[in-house]
Length: 247
Image 1 (cartoon, rainbow, N blue to C red):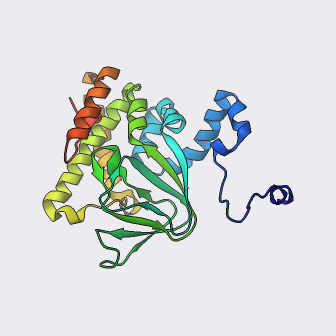
Image 2: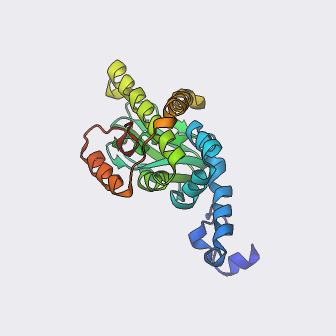
């Protein structure tokens, strides 16, 4: 720490080092860089039922997600992560720190919800066109793992098992969101994942069942179809399973 202070490195404010800040990381062998990324990202992602399922059924794709679709992000105290109505294309997992989430347009009409480490945010952005349903602000220094929806699709399309699983999951997830809209309206939608993954666990269970039932007849898409699906997804006002839709 004495060396760091001599070189004006603030050990109090700096929460963690990311790989793009470590020069030596770039000269490590690819296999070692991949291993290190998995050690950072898998513990954050695997508590989620879908990523746990992918890890069990298609470990190579789970590793590739860590390699190509996941990244680290930080927020300082008082910084805003997203605001109501903003277009969202990433899912986030809180690794450390605390935040406050304000549901809806105004900050004062509803009591904010404290968001703690381990919370998943904005998962719908992976499966449908999504606009944030509230505002998220750091109440302490925070670290996230972010998963890019675009990069996730680019990884998953290369793996037959993972693509079939994600398609089945996306269909079931979209049905869940549609059910919420039908039952309780737009106000029922939120950026925050369910408590103890109750809803996601049920979606993953149904997806696994559907995947096993249809695995013998699964057809896969080409890279050219990915671009076509991306265009259709962007034009859809409410979104849909997109690339992962059933065929």
